[in-house]
Image (cartoon, rainbow, N blue to C red; front, side, top):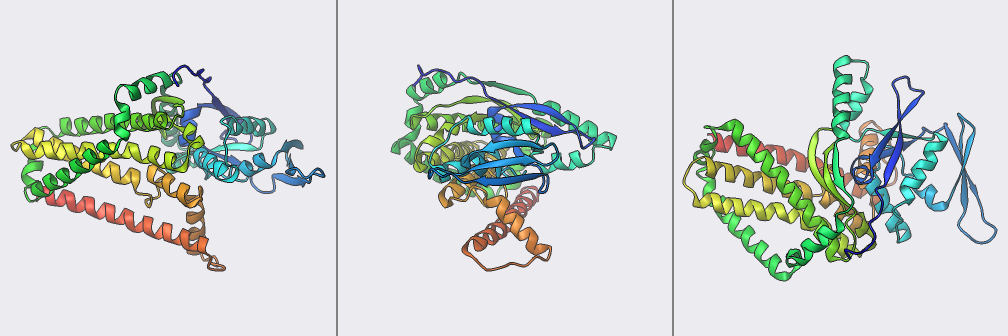
Length: 408
């Protein structure tokens, strides 16, 4: 696989509306970061018209898209229209790609960038900020402090250290031992370590105050060390995702470091080629990276249990707790966060826009809207929102209790 030609670095050029509300700036974003962050938004209803053009040859229909503000016209294929309907400012590019695969059974990596360039030329596409924080800052640009904050986040967001020539590295890493991670023996070892980790954690639970007291001597060093260790394990998490892609004979397209939403430092890997694998391959690729956190957390708990009270014991125990929380957040699908577990869920259910549809429907109900006929889909939406709300509340309560238990 390592001698396959390296694909060129793709970039998306998107229009970002300026403060005057009329003109635009062009923002260029690297492909891998775009999959994580970008949610293209078409013009509002009334600013465009879409008309179907039926084919007399029995082929798929075409569509004429008109920008009513500029009288620009575009011809869209049926598949382009499928993507256009999902450019609502809420659906991420990764979800669009998943929906495309589920609908048509295949995926062309250039179809979305090509369509966005086409829509950009006609002036019918804008860029919706990815996070709630960025949306709030965008709405309050007239305030000097908030405008400066948004400028700083935008500058950080543009920091992207990455390479597209990583397939040979991942292929070699897989040959040098990475393949072992996807054997039954590795699964067994991970299960045993997890059980031992739970036992060690349970035995230290009653002495949590004594364990946590080791951090009081150097709290700043402890916080920085724990955060740095978590960041490094996120890098390992992404490496395992990449190895899973190689395991299923697909290509790792990019690996790098960036600031997610402009303020969260993180590593990332472009595994979009796994869309061409089976559903089993996609699920294993998503789950494999998260297993890193539960295994490392278990190892940290086991090591902490063996040490006498002090900074090292407290540091390892704290790191273990964060690793296990990272595992839960990454794999648990009901928490309003579109991470590995969420993508597994929507892949299995075949509903790539679950979060958006669910929150939109429940939001309408809370604003007094009529529920309409109680369908299976609406039950799924309400269930997703209810489980997510309860799960987040339980997560917060557990962490408050954990801190209270460790300090009293």
